[in-house]
Image 1 (cartoon, rainbow, N blue to C red):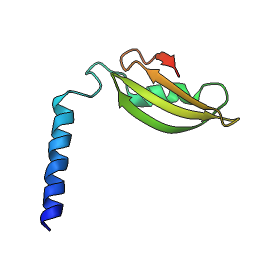
Image 2: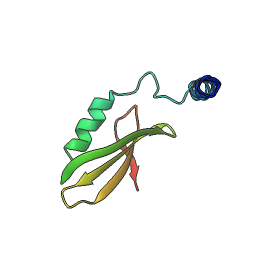
Image 3: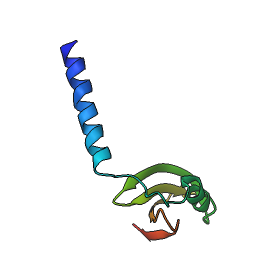
Length: 85
C-alpha cells in the first residue's frame, strides 16, 4: 500500500512540474480539431497515429494510403505546418 501511495505522490509531483513549465498551447491557439481537419484533407491521408504537444508545436504523425509514415509539426496559433520530418 505504501508503494502505491508513494508512486501516486511522485506522479502528482511530475504532473505539477509539467504544468509549472507551462508546457501547453498558448491562449490564442487554434482548436486542435482545425489542425486535425487539415491533416485529414492531405493527399493520400489514411489515418492519424499520434498527436503530441512538443516544443511549442503539435506534432502529428499520420500514415498515407501507401503506408508511408509522415510527421508534421504545426504552429498552434497559425495552424500551419512548421516543417516535416
